[in-house]
Amino acid sequence: MKRKKSNYYLTKVGKIFYYYTYDAFGRRTTKKSTGLTNRAEADLYCQDLFKKDALKSDSSMKLSQYISSKSFFEVGKCRYSLFKGVTEVYTKDCYSRMKVHILPTLGELSFNELNKGIIKYWQEQLVLEKGLAIKTVRQVTSVLKIILDQATIDGLLFVNPVTGQSMLPKNNSRTRGILQHSEAFDLFNKDKIEEHWKGQIHYYTASLVACYTGMRQGEIIALTPDKIKGNKILVSQSYSIKTKRLGPTKTKENRTVYMIKEVKDALEAIMPESGFIFSLNNGQSPLTSNRLTDAFYSAIERMGIDRKARNITFHSFRHGVVTHLRSKGLSDAKIYMVTGQKSSRVIDDYTRFNLMDDEDVIEAMDTLSSPAVDLKHHKAIEALKQLGTAEAKKAISLLTNKDNNGQSALTV
Image (tube, rainbow, N blue to C red; front, side):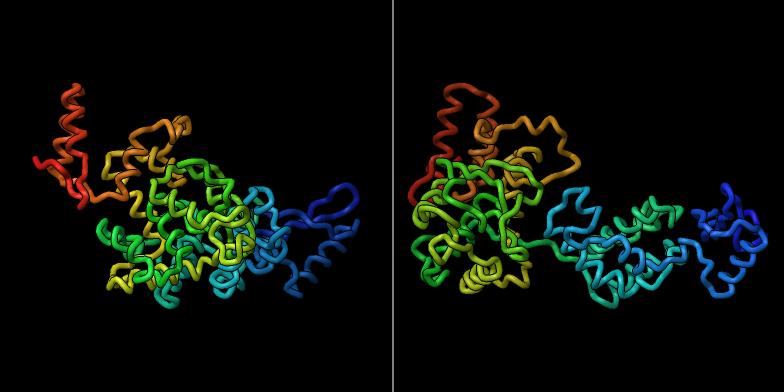
C-alpha cells in the first residue's frame, strides 16, 4: 500500500478547498468541503478537525450508525425492502434478527474493523454461547450480508467480508422426523377423532389437509371456500400470525394442489358459506397456528408417539409428502409444483407443467392415504408397465386392487 504523507488531502474545486481522508484500504474517500477559499486556512481547518478526532473517513462510521441512517428493515422506510418488494413479515423477521443478534455484538464496530476474522468469531459466538442452530446463524448472516452489500455499494467497504467464503459447518440441527404410513392412518382414522383429537374437528381437518397435500400451515389457515374447486385447491395466499392478515404465499406464486377424496369430504363437512374455512367463529377469523400445532402435538402424544425424540413438527407433514412422492418416482420438478418449493435445480421450462394434466402426480397423491404397496408388488408393477400390453394393464389393475383390510388382493 502506498504510504500516505498526511491524514488528509486538500484539493480546490472552483474557489473552495475540499479535503479527502483515507479509508482502511488507503483509498481516498468522498471529498468534503472546508467552506474556505484560502489553502492555509483550509489546512488549519483540517488540522483542527484532526485534533478533535473529527477528521474521520466514512469507513470509520459505526455499523449501528449506518444501519440507523439507512432505516434498515424498518417497515415502510427500508429502501432495500421497498425496492425488492419483500413481504412485511420477512422485513420484520430481518429487523428482529438484526436487533437481537447483530447490533449487540457488531453494532459498535466501524467498517474499518469489520473483516472476515471478526465475522467468523461472531458466528462462532452465536453457536457456542447463544446456542443458535447453524441454520439460524445462516439466516442471521444473510441479514448482515444485505447490510454490508449496501455498505460496499456506498463505498464504506472495499469488499463485503461475508461474501466469498463458507464459514459455517454443516447444520447442527437434527433431521426432521416424519410419521410412518401406519401412524398417519391411525391418526386420521375417522372413528378415532374423539380418542386422538378430543373431537376437535377443525384441528383434525387442518392437519389432515397438511398430511395429504403438503401445504404450508399458513396456506391452510388462509383457506376460504372460493379456493376449493372440485378436487383441487387453489393455493394463492397465506395467513400471517405476526401481521394477523392475509398475504401472498412464501414464494409469491400461486399453485393448484390435488386433494384426495378423504380431504375433500373432510373439508366439505366443515365448510362455512364464506370466510375462513378453519375458524371457530363461523369464518370471521382463522385458527391460530400455535393452537393448531398444539392440537397436533397432543393428538400424536395420545397415540404414544414421542415427538421430541423423533423431532416431529407440524412441518413434518411437508417432509412426509415430499418423501412419499419421491418414493413414487416423481421428478423433483413435479414435487416442487405440488409443494410450492423453489430450487436452483428447477429451470423455467418446468413452469409449463399443469398439475391436473399429470396423471402420475394424481396417482402418487392418491396413494398417500393407502398402505404402501409391498416392495415386490411395486417391482412387479414397474415391470408390467414396461410391457404396456392390455394383459399387463389388467395385471397392474389386479395388483393395485385392495381388499377391505387395505392389503393387496393379489400376492406375487
